Length: 240
View (cartoon, rainbow, N blue to C red):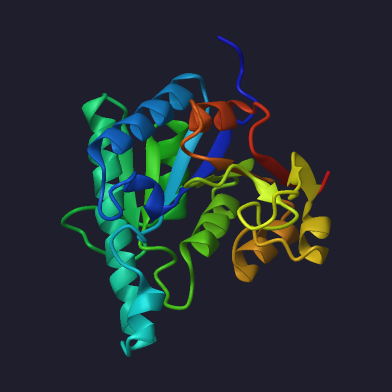
């Protein structure tokens, strides 16, 4: 077996990626395929941590627009990420992949609290670690949580698994047929070109800590497995 390019990776899975074509909730077939790819990546030697979004269940921005208090809406969104994390945990355990879920909001009955040193220890024992509830703070997206956790656990790469987005373009490829896809771009160039990779706080964390990012389509054949192995897929953002 070849040594993987990345020893440790943080995989950010959008909530939308879990719902497939149903438009809401969790598609069991999609969930199973994602779990299979994560399992293969870990067997090949990459330690995998996961941050999952909650947009398939709850959209805090929409709730706020309808008059809900922003902080309350954000906490509801954190609970949605916990539901998704437990679903991923179950899917992994069904295929005998050891994993642990840690939450930024303590819910002792169903998951461990987030403890950095414990998370790293799980990874060293080849367990997948799923980080739920974002950072535990309102006004912070799960993109920010992904960047923060990746830096905290000393991940070598942040894998941004998008739904029907196969990389970074110089303009919207849906609106502009001449849009150019980048195979590689530096953090600085991405910043100056105002490319919307993730929210500003998350991207600033990656930039300041020189954390490389791979943006790819989770629906691409074996996308997670290939990205974790270091294959050329989607768009790589790095300082080198």
